[in-house]
Length: 289
Image (cartoon, rainbow, N blue to C red; front, side, top):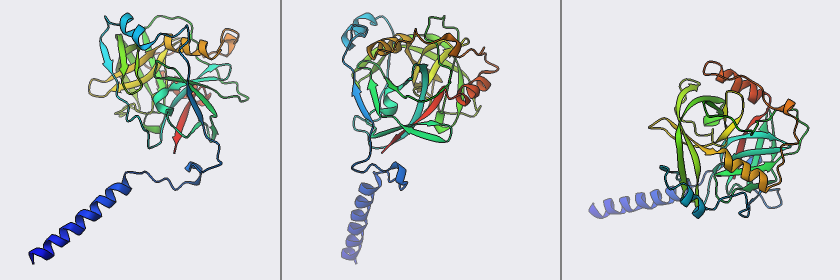
């Protein structure tokens, strides 16, 4: 009887191990989400450090007086897809967070009911930022990158894969460290004061979304959160400017008539966020395996 019992438990153990091995892989049965030989993939490359960019070591010296905020990415070897947010800067340039698209075989950007494959994406060598060009016939207004004071700030995108918006209050600057990407950069810390929908628990999926002022001026890019302390972590606008400069993104030739011109406050931020999404200036990204 004891031998029979032991044999039974050995069989159960073997089945459990096999089950755990197979269940670690997410299987997507949708034909559009499968990566097969011969299909077009997204090319992702890291830019060389340019004169307008600060290296990891330079930022460590320059930002040593700031509080350090550590961010941990899921893994150096990505095994599953996900969603995030991207926003328009004009002249066909779009910005998102690096960790949203890093190591993705295929990256799609949604525009209402359509999805377009993004063919080439460039990563900032010392920032959790990525930039890409997507050429299309569009009249979408863009976010202005000119200087503006940090007062009331908002962010819009697709938290949890669905439309959502937050109002955030500036608390101070910090040094953002991501050891997986060997990144050390200047960031801003905000307290999340309001959410829409009101029951929004996590803002995951809002990564890559714009942090913008009441006058639609870009303050930075949202890259992380601290759920317990209700904080939003934003990459500083200086990293956006250096990334644009490195890819030849001259936005000064773009007419300001096409820039966003809403007046945003804590009472209407969700309505404005919806309008910006409806105008396709903020779109959802899909990392597909």
